[in-house]
Length: 230
Image 1 (cartoon, rainbow, N blue to C red):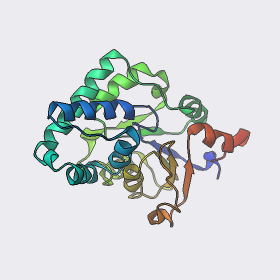
Image 2 (image 1 turned 90 degrees about the vertical axis):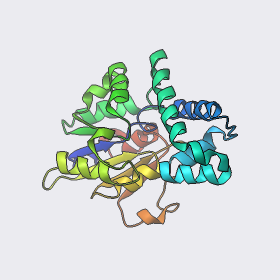
Image 3 (image 1 turned 180 degrees about the horizontal axis):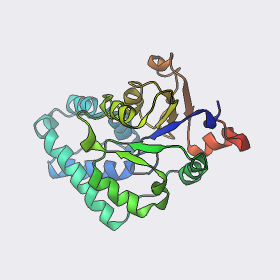
Image 4 (image 1 turned 60 degrees about the vertical axis):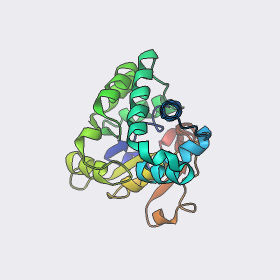
């Protein structure tokens, strides 16, 4: 499959393009501690649950720690506040291979856009610090749609606004919640994650879709080669 075959490119942000997930993890632990909750999850455990979406994450948290049930809203509110405050001390780096891959795509002169659960204010801080984000022609942030991923509202909004008749769409995601949201539109699905095996064998719900999985953008580009193939 050739990259040149696609007309519009959709990308998730957190965990796919930029390494924000460890910051969210530390913010979550701090928010729980403020609520007098000791949650002994390591980062892989936290990531596994958070990648399912807030509703399933909340159910798992309360199932394992029933005392969390009365303060979920506060935990999520504080997690975001603590995360946002941490950006004052510096934004996290891009994920490996992201800058090179985006620069390669820019030569095609086709629309590249971000579709994220993050609010616009937090996104602006990241955009200011990473010049390569100027290559994106549109940003769909949390204010643009009703329900977050894994619901498909974000991608349906992006598809209606930025796709055009006859366009072939490809979307890149790093989490199960993101892939489930992406599945709501007619797009080739590309999973890129060093933390989870996101394959059609692992998740047969995507068996009917054109679907690719890579552990990093570096691996993706190695398979692209000089002919720019996915």
